Image (tube, rainbow, N blue to C red; front, side, top):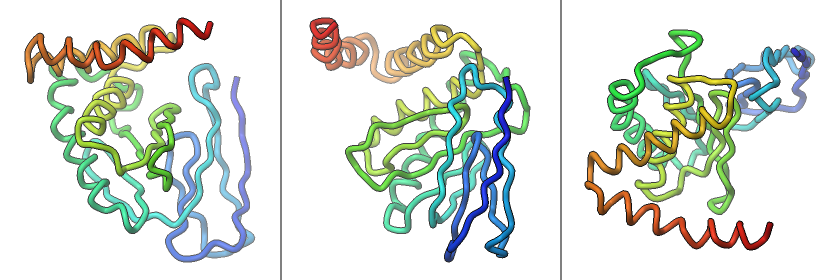
Length: 193
């Protein structure tokens, strides 16, 4: 199943950027010009549009669109990707659908907003702690390097990569501490079902 949408931005000012289907599109300066977004696979990708005035940080493995006052968070996320990319390549290899594809990260203004990932596009507040950014980068790169139409494989490998990374860096105690820190949330979710 495929979907095409034409977006006609109006009243955009400054550095407005449009993201759709994990790709950044620069709207034309002409307010009447339209941009076509196509969503090739709706099986694991949620149609998603993001538009705003973002600054950009472009690295070899990731492009980050960040709000002007979140530059340090964008730099921290870029470092997290740089630190975790060799690990993901070593453990899972690079099986990207398009060899030149890279992750896109878009900053969210609300520090308490939950991250949301669709395809190779991640929406997340870039004001998180370094450990959160690192684990997020591991998950995003795992999804990008080892795509699967089966969510249980995609997310399972991403969580495995996070735990394997923690074990490599801090040993078994680091993994157990991480799992223990998520135990209460798991129990609460089981009690609500």
